[in-house]
Length: 221
Image (tube, rainbow, N blue to C red; front, top):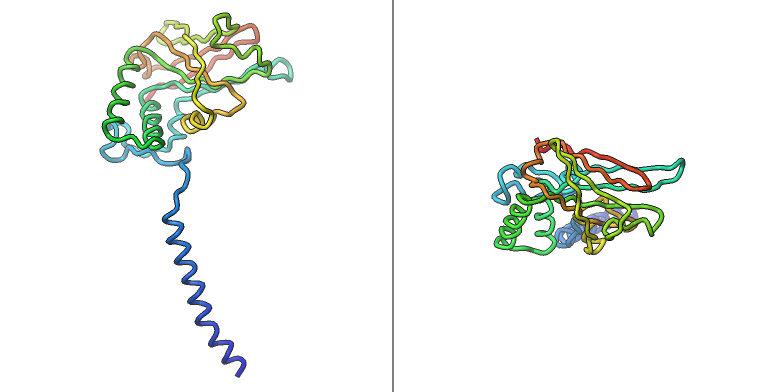
């Protein structure tokens, strides 16, 4: 009798567990999850230019346009940086990420794409995430900075205009996943059209009394 009574309790227990699982799945499907750098970009339908319709993650696109280096004096790190060349592929990824974050409509997206196209036709922009242990040496944007940022491409050399990027850390990390709160963000602007150089190897040099480091950005395929 006891065994039979035990068996009769199994059915309702299974039903209760099944119901709970179904409820959990429904609630899970309704909840929102934060965007990450591993999310796929939109460009698989009518969104964006044709060359961006191959699905890629935001992080992959940013990494494809980024390079970095460290400089040491013995065992001590004198400075390090990671930088991203804002070529046409990276610019589109940044537009998509901002569009998702701020819920831009079609007209706003179109306006941002047009603005970026005009900017890229007139100049080249590099985002720089920079670190040096001595705070007083972290002065790339100062009029009397100890640093110079130089771009070499196609046999010509360009010196950067440097300004501090004033966006919040959380926004910068959304756009450039490698950036950390320990680094200082800068925007480097060079007087050469991005469209004219993005099919070539582009060399960026950060140089000053503490050392010199050079990295290469690979051309778009």
